[in-house]
Amino acid sequence: MNEVFWNPRAFRTKARSSDPVEETRTKNKTVFHAVVALLAVLAVVLVLYGGGRWLEKRAEKPETRTQLPQADQETVEVDGVTYRKKSRLTTILVMGVDHDTQDSYEYRKAGQADFLRLVVLDDADKTVQQLQIDRDTMTSVTVLGLLGDRYEPVTEQICLGYAFGDGRQTSCEVTVEAVENLLGGQEIDQYLAMGLDGISTLNDLAGGVTVTLEDDFSAIDPAMTRGTTLTLHGDQAETYVRSRRSIGVGTNEARMARQESYIRQLSVQLDEKLQKDQNFAVDAYDALQPYLTTSMAKGQLVNEAWAAKDYTRLDTIKPDGTYQVGEDGFMEFYPDADALQQAVLQLFYEKLNKRAQDTFRIKTLSKPRELV
Image 1 (spheres, rainbow, N blue to C red):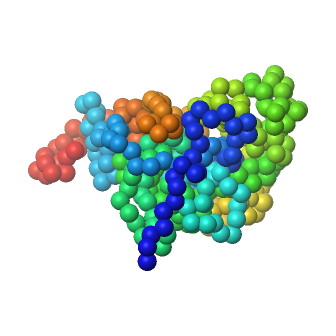
Image 2: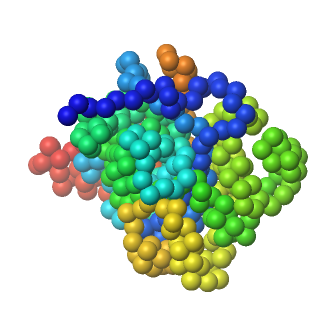
């Protein structure tokens, strides 16, 4: 049977498009091993943004994974410091998809994962931390054919992997694999994706989020003028977190900064509700379930969320990097190799103190192949 291909340009958005209303949507997710995730995840889930596009295979681009610790390395030495892989982590990839939730999607029209956050729960240190992943990040993405057969990976924007799947499980799995590729093969345990139609529900579950508008959204909602302080309700939340091209400078970087401030406030409000009522986690999951695709069971999520409600939230990691317009006119983001390396070390590894390092070297002296 002949393979069916599509026109990649038909689903892309020019980096400098002047389109007045953006076409991307939101996402949702939940956590698997801690409530901080439910509120970090639920909070994060909500913050999907828009902008879609499709990139073809690129010419050679800067490789950012050469300095990354690989997943099979239990220890690694960087700048004279030895790091050991953490053993009690739960990792959840949260995706916001630029599509309303549907029962099925046409081939390669499942949308894109325009909002990406990796939530890392550390049961040993009782912490939760997030990695913010730019949708334009260039990395290796697996291509699926019409019947789900796999082709050679291509280097393209990480958000595009989602479109290769079915808009459900396979789309999530391809995106998980792309993020694992970006991070040197570090394993992601669970995933949660939310369609853009779940944003308003999540926002309203938190009681609405109050913001001061630094940009003018009045072309979309007359009440949302620059300088106004208001509590977002319903569709206003979606407008605030996903709008990009017609807002302010119109860049994804500016939108991510807006989303980050929104997530922080949303997380506080969700956390307050969870602290008061364990059933809030159940109610939130039930309300959001129609918009979710996840590998996590409801009972597991709710129980772990409650158990981890007191975890400390660490600052979100956002690796530095370089934006450039590709040869075909679409935006690309290349993470700085050192910044990405530090992100992997911070999320997945812990420093060994000098005594532990000396003990480690003595124990492994007769097994040099185990040293990194």
